[in-house]
Length: 80
Image 1 (cartoon, rainbow, N blue to C red):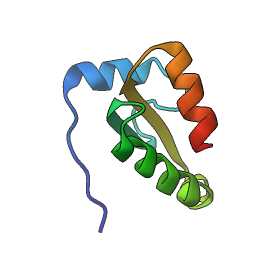
Image 2 (spheres, one colour):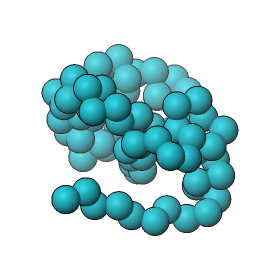
Image 3 (tube, rainbow, N blue to C red):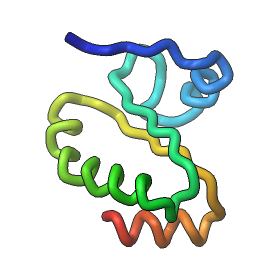
C-alpha cells in the first residue's frame, strides 16, 4: 500500500519548477529543520543507505531545510 499525502498548494507549485519533481512523478519531499540537527543527519544517513532502492523505483528526492549555502554544502558532504 502506498501512502499518499496531499501537500499544500504553494509547495506543489514550487516543486513544479524543480527538474524531476513535476506533477505525476513519484517523489519524496523531505522538510527538515536546521541541517545540522541530529535528526536531520540521521535521516540523511538512512536515506543514503536506501538511495539505490529509491532510484530503482523511480522516486525523485528533494530535501528542503533551514540554513545557508555553506551549511548546505557541509551537510551534504558529511552525509553523502
